[in-house]
Length: 466
Image 1: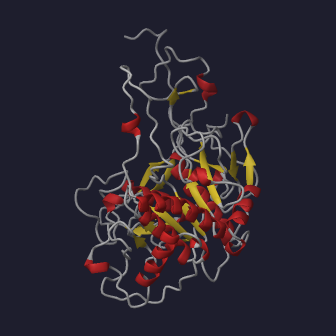
Image 2: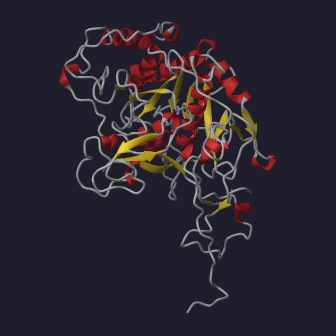
Image 3: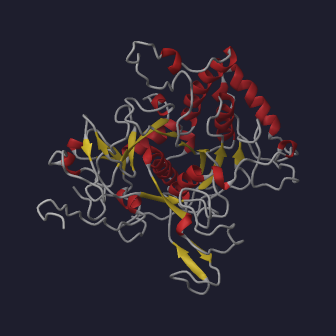
């Protein structure tokens, strides 16, 4: 028997509401009602371009939000494919805007804009050379989670004969929602390590289709602006500089990376570009979040947990705003933040206050790829039945990081536009300023963290208020 004097009593994990971030941001009340707002019926829904991995097709909460005509894949082919259009039906008029101002003075971007507009002309085929879009469920976990936090709608889904809990008349309620349940979401997918050309095309496409908000919940692998941190020497004095240096690139590639950075800034003057700021305590945020400045519309988003403390991993300086997200443990010379509820938590050697119990066990809950793909895989080995739901565990997942926070902030901006609080014609800086006007500072000891709050004050979930 263990010694009673050394037995560690761990509190149970609290049950928590999957929509706690929306309550925390004043979008919903505690009983999930809109907090003083009603969605109008706009002539055109707020259009959010999500530059990320692909988004899962067939998710009940996402289907009404996704633009099947405009979704664009830059993973499979150089000038892109339309994954959800019939492969044998020529393109119609996409009603593209004018991006000349965004590429002014950028010769490579200008050339790519000409090529992209030619590829998007009416009569072109959705797929080039019959190549299938690379949008399988295997690739879609991150984009699907971000999409749900932005624009998911509550839904009802049909169930199989083996009824699920709560099944009523062959249907089950799936009451999950993103911040703006009226938005039109346009997935623009790239591969996991895209080159500058694919990224230039992604931003040009978002600009051409008139996106009101662009969300980029990931890092971009610019070899000049994303340099790995490595020690200068090993224990024998051998230099590591060569190992840490980026791979050699041709002159054109260097020029295109430089042009991409300017293009992102130029596009942000026309519409806000919301970027995740990083998950490794980066001093000024990852690229391109670190492009954020007073004179552009790039919005760098850090993360705070459900207790209102900046998350243990979040970039802390150079940020525009913070969004709710899952927390992480940390134990180093800068901070001790451990989960006292974890089954293997050992208090020996841990400072008594454990960073004043800043850790929060509350996770972001997001939409996931139905079935075997995604972060939370289905226990069934085969494909999902056509149109029927046989389990719902795989439809949702735990998500987090500044990716999740950026998705929520992107949804918040979208909701503001849907409610008529700002207009894209005013530009990205005006949208950012509206966002900051709706932000609330957290307690002074939490640094300069501010989170967007639509109405009232931030509401922290039960069992997590400091």
